[in-house]
Figure 1 (cartoon, rainbow, N blue to C red):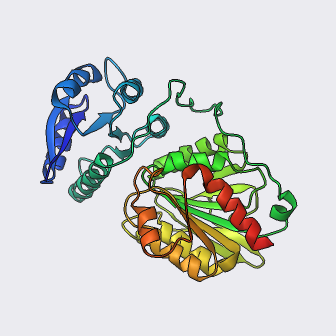
Figure 2 (figure 1 turned 90 degrees about the vertical axis):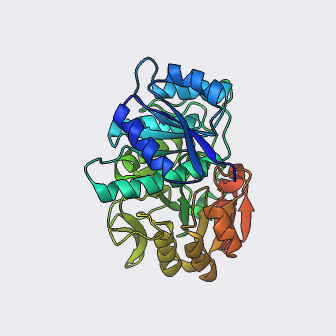
Figure 3 (figure 1 turned 180 degrees about the vertical axis):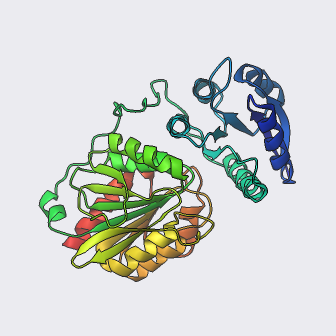
Length: 360
């Protein structure tokens, strides 16, 4: 079997050493070289022809974002970003994903041995997924939106032809995603009208990143997007994103839907878990719900989506051609959980159509 050739780019000698050690543990991966900055990396890419890059964000001579933007225009290839667990690190990482990076890992806590083993496992999985991921090629006019500004190029929301219908029903849309999901979710929300049914989202994301991610989605959508709070009432026109390290569930409080957050053990290795959200939606909303699994690695959400479909909900998954990684949607499709497969650009329309069809 051909090994995955990886080039590690990081200005820290210690980080380069750790990343090389972690990746070299897997027999399917070969670290073909390292580079302390993007200038040296540029030359090594030409000589070594790697399959995947790991790329630090803050480096001397050229920052990681500038290098990534140039790379994705001139020589698109899979990139896994290495980010710090800070608000600044989160903002820049989300910009990197918008520019075409496949995924990211945060810098490991070097003093925790058990944590390092888990980190090595995650890093290997993400590099392997990146090697077979579909790379989004940037158009000449594509630039990441600066933090704090609106998306100038966001698609116009779909016409709210059924505005009265949406306002007088209690439809719930539940969405799950992982690898590639930050951009897929942005594309879906950008097409939603301001008074669309309430949307609950579980995206696999660290705790420090979910707040900036929700703020970024709010700037991209006519709907009001926030990080979910425990006990928060769920109302149309609003989007509730699971906070990192917390499961998000749907619950009933009398006649109202509310958000519930908890830190029960991870499911499918994830907290938040898509399955936790979907099962709660199946239980409390049943046929009044619509579920969607977007791009992502693994199979989280497949069994939960099946539970939703069995409870009478309408269900769909993103198609393979438009997914960065067709792990989660593919698993749900193979399980028989999806009644429809949709290209990313049609998912918002299909979700709204499902809500309208149910309300008729």
